Length: 508
Image 1: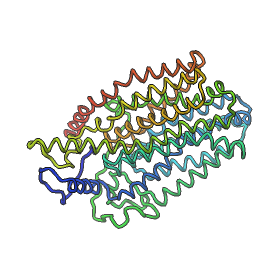
Image 2 (image 1 turned 30 degrees about the vertical axis):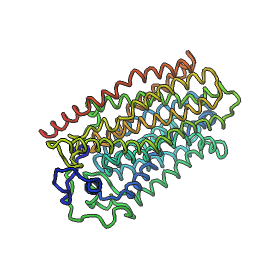
Image 3 (image 1 turned 180 degrees about the horizontal axis):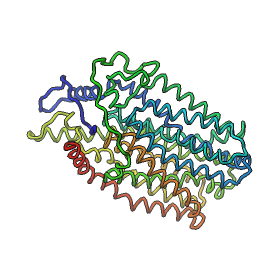
């Protein structure tokens, strides 16, 4: 198993233990990055952009459907509650399917699984667009198939980042990557509403079909295979099936004589739940994600009751506030994670230089056994979590008191920013802990948070109706406050758990 910060030392790297000058340190870091991946920084960003476009389909496919629910219920001559059941089964498959596809991607490659998932999504959308309104059962079945195709793209994209990005780069890559998944909840309801109103509800699925086909073509043409057990750092030439039609990244830097990486066994992703540090992060992330879903799913109903002057289009535009905050968070949080990593590394290098007995090269400082990756990734999380908690409670009471609509919308922006910053930090750390199983661990993260999210969706309206939005979101904020010590627990237990895994791997 690959370990965080573990590098292959280049012959160009000086073996001296004296402190390095800033220029020499920067040069050594560039050597480490080149040895980890043959791709340039610009080529890595290009690969991440394609992965982000594919990851857009997981939330987009879910959210674009919402505005058309009343119309679809009328077309199928059934109740809205029955059509809402298709949302429930979608969320169930959204949580379960990445466990299968993510594990397969860690075994047979990112590129083929990307293509299979997008093909399944495209074909299911064609079926939904042509479905007879007398076959309600087929709506449920095709929505399950649609979720099975679209939901895994986030886990696959996270796997790509784990393949090509060093720990020093992953924060920035995840910041850009999550831009795709965050755009979906913001634009999905608006696009779905416009299509359903102007062209009919079937046009929503034709739209998704065309979009997924375009993304499928982009991956076939441009995306290289990145799974390290197949292509190493990108220098191993895989079989033609794994190669893009137009190899514009890494061109001319492939070593045809490079040895093929050893094959790994198929790992059971469920065993990741038995890693205490991983389980702690998964639960913390899922709790905050469930609270986010509680806010997002009640925007339309609460705003309609508290601000009756809003029409359906106005309510749809209200989703842009929280979506805009999330997009803003993706841009800044990734840069902050990379800056925190470098700040922690610089501090460790300086501390090592001051102790003659512990001097080491910069690349040695970043090795897993020497680097406190939990402290670097979670450094800002207590601050973001505190803002998240206060904003959640304030948002509920602003709606309870029916303040000027600008107040809850501004709080939505802050709420969206902080939840994105928190989830990006946790997700990046999870990849750092187990980079060789990055798709599997992202699938585990998706399973836990979607399960809690689905549970929250099923009860949030009942809670709001019973005690009002003020006390509802104060209660949820209190739950988040009670869970906040899990951040410090992650920093404390993380190095111990990583040491235990290293010891097991060494004796295996």
